[in-house]
Length: 152
Image 1 (cartoon, rainbow, N blue to C red):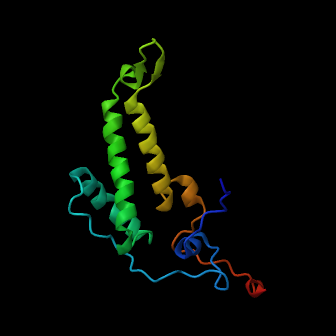
Image 2: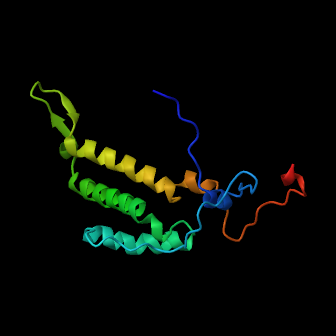
Image 3: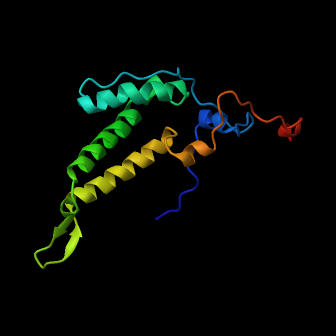
């Protein structure tokens, strides 16, 4: 298996983090900051989350009309995670017993764990974790003035 380098960071994210450099980075293609249309076949729970989360992300400059698929994947995993979690109402629902009498994590808990992993990974793309937000600047902040040293 080949080693992977650091993940690519979008130009807009670098601007928000305050480490964008004109000589190395580009903003990529210019996209309009907006909430993409929710897919017509999206479940109602995803539509509700879309109406709540979409405008927040757009207001932060983290969402454009071309982000429909990643936003749908994020919200679909999130709403399914909530449904699976709601079904795990007792410890007995979290544990299965094998035919040999061994205890193991139930299929529902394995599904819940995988969905949570998907939610956290997708959430990082939208700045939904404290760690992913820690490097971002507030919208009123400007890039630090390096007194001409940025051109070196």
